[in-house]
Length: 379
Figure 1: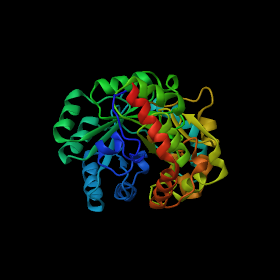
Figure 2: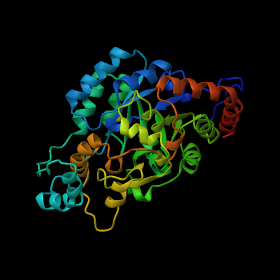
Figure 3: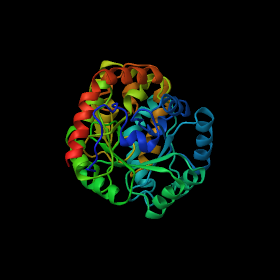
């Protein structure tokens, strides 16, 4: 860890993360993939945190529009998030036979809901290079990414434009690789996190390390400031993250449960209900390992022998069930993305959530953060 001395009187929120990003509070809103909204991103940024927008599923032209809309809502720093790896092996060669074998596990539910069974369609890839070009041309404040390390020329161009880069690591080895590439801030993402695992050096199934174990190991292994993520939903989690050496936190599910996010009413109600106390990992929703509220659909798709298409083909297939299931209010058949601390979600308003977090942290955090700083100074 970098040797530096900070006065014990420095407030908890004055960390390298807040300084690098130019924000008041080192709280990053998780990008939330397809459930991001411009409103949520701007709300978090306007409060003084870092709002994020998950744009990996959007075409380049749509990303350009999103950036313009966010800039109409805030002049504060915000992040756009992409996936470095946008498809899995076999996505371009998978055909009608594979599609039919995977569809049979969903067909009964689709027909029971009165929807037509989908036909096989040719795969049209979304290119990371096209997406990131929009971010670079727009000179966004921060570029966050998962599932890999962007090519060095992209990172160099980010530095030239003053774009802060935020990479995601699910193992210590991944954090070291990101640090060596010159990434500015590294998110240590524990397996408690909701949504997709961001692993890229080893299979996601072999990279399942908890936040409490991963964060201090990453802090000790690199000089880059670390943001803890996964299972953090309230002030207790944030304070614990700082005690582990993190200089910021990333929170996803707690923001997803607010009305500012893009989750449906059915999804939001599930996050705020006792059912959210149990979450599970599955490849069945999209083809890549991800965490959601445990339900009937996860159980069925996790059964041995169920054929799962490579990402993003499986994701496109499951949408044919998600749309009619959402209309029917059948939450047992929905993709209910959630982290392991989903049951701690309480607030329906993102600004109120932030106000409560900052108030509660400020009351007790400074001694913990000062201890963290003193330990760093000794290294």
